[in-house]
Image 1 (cartoon, rainbow, N blue to C red):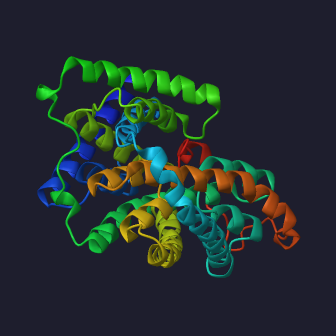
Image 2 (cartoon, helix red, strand yellow):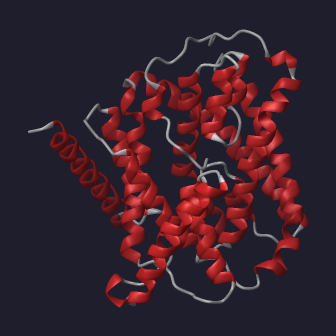
Length: 372
């Protein structure tokens, strides 16, 4: 067996594990079964040191499909609603400041990380940018990488249940996304391919963050907002994309030992609790002053990744445009402001050693482009 065929066999095994996890979650009537089931199964296998493997290029086309699906949730009367979102954007700024401050304090005083690592690992978004800037400032690269990856993992795993509780209905009982592939006209496949391919290249050309998601989403949204089409990607294709994305997220933890990952996951669980608490408080305040639903605001504020939160929004039939706009704004806010704010706060320029000891391993194996 050649090296390439070995990797192919590991990839096939990983997809089989992910698909089985999705099927089990579906049978158990759990929310977002295909993505969360795949994520749970592959993560457990990674912690058990099974040779799970997902090639890097797999994420981009799967993310593009989700982007097209999210763009299909935009509607022609979008512009009439944007002005009504201003209070929630103000609340989002307050949330970002409060969450960043609370998480930085938690990582510094509880996790005992150094000030640089605590700051950039505690920012609610911008995984790739926070790793790069944090490394340049002297923070521990792998610790920052693992904390952000774990933040996304834990919030993705827990938030659907919280939203289900807030909504009072089962996400698992929501109607499937799209139509069965056998009932899908050829034009839908053409439009899906067009939006995905053109969107990825357009997103890269425009320099968008998470361009493989936002580019296709913007192309699809433009077609839907203009009223030119109402197509939605077929159910089976969206399910396969969710399984693949769950496998990608779960396989991030293969480069470290179970002890290292469990330690980080324990710390990240505490940080996720802090984040979710701040999310609920800020969303409740904004909801009390506006007509916006609490569940939609929780989804819009939660720093669990635009792709994943968009899927939850689809499941509860929330306004995808509302959720996507807030996540994009949050990520841009963190990317633009985190570095200058850190430079302004000179008191964060202390020790560059992780006080509890850095997590060993290869950050490059875990780090992937993220919309988190």
